Image 1 (cartoon, rainbow, N blue to C red):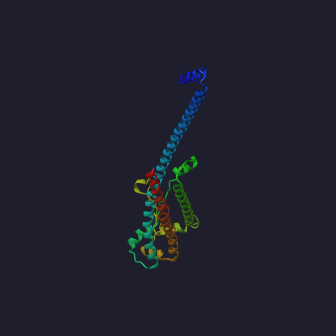
Image 2 (cartoon, rainbow, N blue to C red):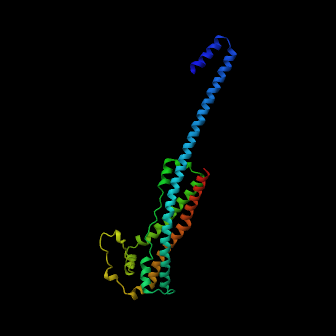
Image 3 (tube, helix red, strand yellow):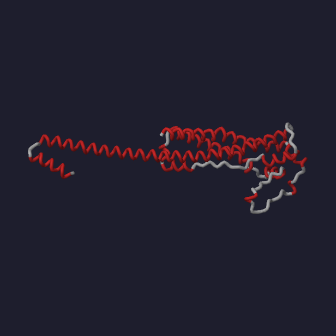
Length: 259
């Protein structure tokens, strides 16, 4: 093909067809430019397609991570609400405003503290930020994810303050109270590798002594601090983290559908 065009140029020059040669050369230049532009356009289109594919994959991965977090939040909220409802009744019994049979009270005391932890997954978002892919997301999605991160950090700070109830318990006040109330940590049967540790005789109380201890004003204050900590976490997770997580999932679904 190159030889063919070269022969045409040579024939025009030998035949003194200079004007035609100029027009031909100009046409050849235009064809080359058009070819380059088309190649650039195709390359840009391929790059855009790669970016859109990468963006879609990132959005799907973030959505999957958020969906897993949503399930964890729902489970955490359910556990918290159950424990808080029980602890609310124990506090009412402590003030004398609610009568609870002793058998039920013992069950309530055993279930009033929520021991579950809420572990939020963030590895996909962190990897996207470190790799520079986070910028591919829309401003609205990025804003929601940033707000969600701020809420998680604020909750962690609240949780840290709440944990001071136990970490600053130098004289083991809480541990002694839990032991007297019969609150002994028990692993599920399938996880036990050793026999359960019984309550020390000094901490064993009669039914009347347990009732009196629950109604004691200092016990009331200790249990109320636990209730405040757990109830605050329930509200924070339910109306903060879960709400923003759901909103972000809906937003990602909308953008995926539009694309």
